[in-house]
Length: 371
Image 1: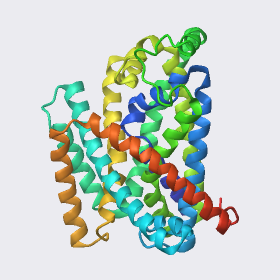
Image 2: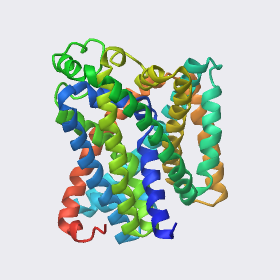
Image 3: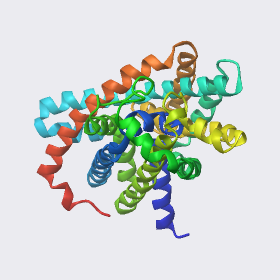
């Protein structure tokens, strides 16, 4: 495999890994944001995909064009479009909030791993969080290049397993799909199935898209700065096919078996269990892998805000941040953190998009994108 193709596939895998966290791997996000809209789920996916493509092209392109030294510097670029004084204040806010949010999201991932291991395998509380923390800290210490290489290999495995389960169960659910779609559209399962967007698929897509913006901002901006821009953008665009293609198949599978997935905490395990109890156990491991692949860049983003890679300070803060996050996750329920932090992030994500649109229009980013 030549170097160019390897880099494209590695970046594609890293984007997939970052995007597919616990929520996607369990299919709970897919159920709430997309499948809950029945025949209109494709509108949600189109909106999310559009936001994902535009924002990530912008992050990578501007990061490359301006050769930013640290991913978080991208906020100063966008916010500066409204004047030096306002831009500086807004940039500092976004930079610190993004780093804080990503770190707290890492804590949430530790809580998710802890809960999954306790509920699925009956392990003592704390074991899941400790194992995840050890793996994440060890990977983050490798730095951005090591992270991309590691996630680039794990991401495709996760998406492949999700596709295997969702394609099989989508096929077995086809006989009931039409009647189930009608039932979902009629609100038959609304009492047991949570739905984002208050019945509006466009709002649901906007909320979902806005949620991941601050996750990817610093990550892709720095990747764009340190790698060939064309390869970065091609890798990111390739990830779109896998991520949203998988989401579409998952929706069909979930709706095809909506009688058992609507009220499930982990719909993916319900679907996997219909194929084989052994596969359900394997898929539980895949869910943990999904948590790991999101937790790594989240911790990296928080640590990178206060230290430079390769330094003693970077290693100490990475270890300390991992340990503190693990302890917090073991003693504080993570569901509350999800509701507050993720909701706030979605709103602020759209404020950032406004800055991005104005900046990119003024600098004519479309002429600089390389694909």
